[in-house]
Length: 440
Ligand code: GDP
Image 1 (cartoon, helix red, strand yellow):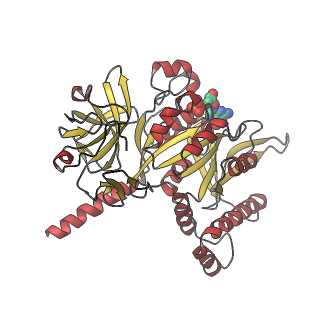
Image 2 (cartoon, protein in one colour; image 1 turned 120 degrees about the vertical axis):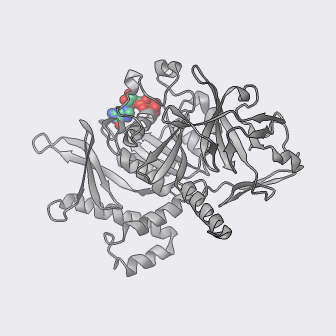
Image 3 (cartoon, rainbow, N blue to C red; image 1 turned 60 degrees about the horizontal axis):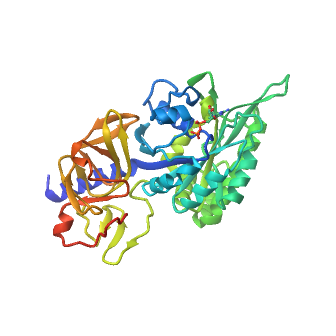
């Protein structure tokens, strides 16, 4: 194989791996269900074989004993998992408690996208509003949780999202309630998938049972009408931003809202979400195992990969940091440099010091000498691990866009939260412009 072909293949391979990565965080007011939803995500991704329960204090993400007893998430942990071979999700668990908003700001820096969870009874709460505004530039998906609760209001919460968070929205799915013919009682059982035109039902006693069916226009005329109206409003909203969609709609779908293909809708919605024009909305009840798989699909479908992230250029006095879609972050146009940000440092009782980093460009390798721009000192990377749910897996390198952990004695005293770590060669490049305490 020729050199040029090899380089091209390498580029394509690296690109397709990067395209699958989603560095996301979950933001929510305390008690909206962030921990429960995370637990269910891990379960459906095959990372745990049981359903954790925050009320019994046995969840994976709240891993500090202190957190278990207080029932709140204090530390941000980063956990990685694959979703049906479609996406490699790195979930950075941002704290939901008002007292820890400095932690939230720090965590937001390393996210490419966010899932915002709402309690369908409480609607948009103060903390969510605050964090939403702090994360203005990050594309977001909304998950209206706890739809099973008495007093849950889907439309009310959607209206609040539009008004209080000042955003346009797209309803990806809407709630489905079964009706008991005798008592006339309604039970939240699933969702109507507006884009794929399906009814998805869950059996809450069996977390693995999910039933996906077509909606029959004759037998299920009420549901069919709901689907039609929801699609009509979704396509109209998307068309306001995208003239092409109007043309495709009139030509391919003959003006029928049910005919437009789901791939066309998804592509348009993805672009608008990445541009921060629209926030897709889904609903569910994670405690009852309802709606979590579509939420994971939406993370892959609508949130950006590290190469699509829209971080602005950073102009400093002596250097410019720019995002390049194939190389990642470049300093003064130097694409060969490795740049990472340490966004979280914790001391684990078993593993000792753990420094969570996001690689913005280049590669971090085991045993490499790197340079801390804050301390202005070099140090050696000892052990490099990736958190597989809560199990650390030793790895040799971390690539652009990835999130991992530095551990081992060599990092003691060498890295703190907020430090930028660069490949040692930067010093030789004569770039002495990183000032003390300067963060990315
Ligand atoms: P966090 O503070 O946002 O992490 O919220 P938790 O996941 O700890 O959930 C807070 C409480 O809400 C717990 O008692 C959960 O059992 C409950 N909860 C979470 N999701 C749901 C849901 O979908 N329906 C209902 N009814 N309760 C839920």
